[in-house]
Length: 407
Image 1: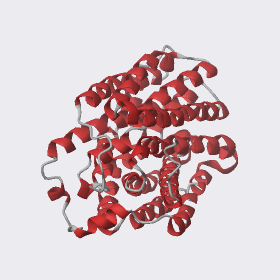
Image 2 (image 1 turned 90 degrees about the vertical axis):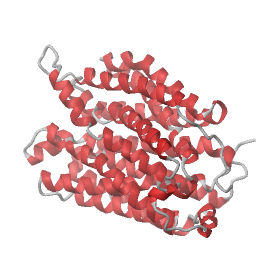
Image 3 (image 1 turned 30 degrees about the vertical axis):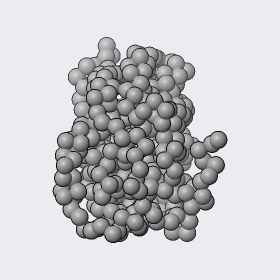
Image 4 (image 1 turned 180 degrees about the vertical axis):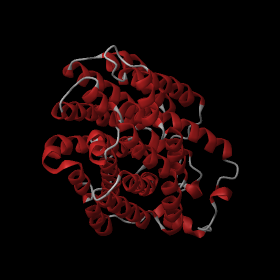
């Protein structure tokens, strides 16, 4: 029997809204990675300075995870989710009208606050609403929203960049604001959250973490490895294809679509598998397989071979990530379920936020024979280190698979 056969319409709407919220959030984020050179040319600077937009976005996401998570724990998941979606849509639109690089960087930092709030709130709403037996597949589906957004950004880039320019792409990025209408009309509040209002909703983060500090430290370390794993294989990859492999924007878009299809398949597959073999083993399996794929991914030179290897790599990267939403929600202290998963996730993001400038500096310090930056070396170095680290962290950490949220 399918785990979704007994879902109510309300449960389906909650999962759809949570998935779309993260997908459109990722779409807005990844628009930047396709237009580094165009933004740099418009503002009269170099690509390395533009990559600080990614750094600032990632660095500010913990602020959003904390603010929107606390709002969700105190006032409900639904209004906090709506506020996050509206905020990141407004910041995306404002980015299209930035008159200078400094203003653009400030707007991307503000966008990071809004983006940081969506994941934790949407995930808590979803997992508090669906049956326990469905958590694995729902986890994979929610996390598949991230590569789905990346894929959508690749399609928009390949189809419209020459017609609308990078500013036009950011205007398109304001479309997620329409999701508010769907959430307002179709998505109910979490019954688990409603039942929990018998306790003090003003409980502080610190009191909620009492007795869980070691768990929080482990979760932040785990999410640091996870964020280096994803951003280290994704953020500069289109730039690497364009600059070091010499592909056109159309070819880069095609390859990005292919590897994001792999990411979606990986998230769904490994997320569902985690319900059978356990969260930790599923993560370790995907991280170990990424190490096997690594040389094929970094050293391939033709478009077809790169697309195949990138499909396999992102299957493993987002396969491991497909377990994260449910794993963090199950580990979370009950009173902080909207705050804890998103906050530790985004703190890990903060530590990994320097990834793009770091990989750029590594590439520039290991130039190729033609004196070009060696992005292949930088991508492989970071991916290899963090995949091995993630494998170990997953196996030594705790697990609370299928714990009841309403207990």
